[in-house]
Every structure is written in structure tokens, then in C-alpha cells.
Length: 171
Image (cartoon, rainbow, N blue to C red; front, side, top):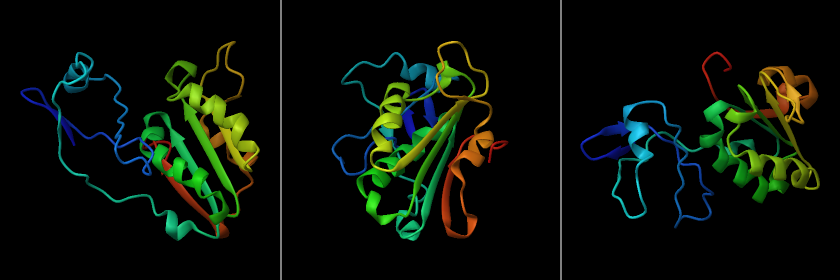
């Protein structure tokens, strides 16, 4: 829980690399009174943090199996730390498949990072599939909701551990 004194608090996931513990990153989309107030912060302004709450992604349980990471919209933020770990420890999994969807190109979180990963990760034998519900002329990847790219992944459910985060309708 991240809060601004006198404004309120919101649940915000840690989106940073867990092996760089001195830097904690959060991704906050301005959607209401509290998140709007974060836009006005300057370096050095105080914020409060309670937690962490919840549990980490069970990467150890996925070892030896295929790992599928499926993110929709803002769901990519909490999955980002698991992606960093999967990249760093690629040899612990049979296959790693990352599938990310968003409403449109302008809603895709970490767009530059994903573009880089898409090219760079194929050399590490990590599949990355990106899609948007409604594409424009600038979008070079798939069009459709994230579940439409599942056939490209050719997952075998009996040997796949899947991490999913996104809108309830997607899950």
C-alpha cells in the first residue's frame, strides 16, 4: 500500500527487479483522486509504504517446467519482477513464454522495454508475444485480446506453470 499523507492510499505493486533491492519501482496510472495526486510529486517528496502484502510469484515451484507469464494492461507491472527473474534464471525452466496485451498501443506499459525484449529475448530462447485489442498503423505486433495469442504459444498444460495478472474478464 502506497499513500500520500492527507490524500489517501492505493494498492500498488512493486515493478522493479528483485535483485536490485536498493531501488523500488512502482508503476502508477493516474485514474482517481489518490493516483492523480502522485503526478504532482517531486524528487524528495514523502510517500508512505505499508507492507508488502500478498505473496511472491512461485518461481521455485515452476522450475523444470514451462513458464507462461500472461499480462493484461496494468497487470504487467506486478509481473515485471517475475519476468526479470525468469530472464536471469532462464536455465531453470524448459520454456519461457511471455504474453502481454493492452487495449491499444498507447496503453502498453513499458513499451520500449518490451520492444527490446521481443528482439533480445528470442536469442535467450524466451518467446514474447505482444498484442493490443485495437491496433493502429504504428503497431507492429498482433491485434486481438491477449487470449487470442495463446495458440501461438503452443502451451502444454500438464507441464506449464502460468502466472496471470490483468483485468478480471481476461483471467
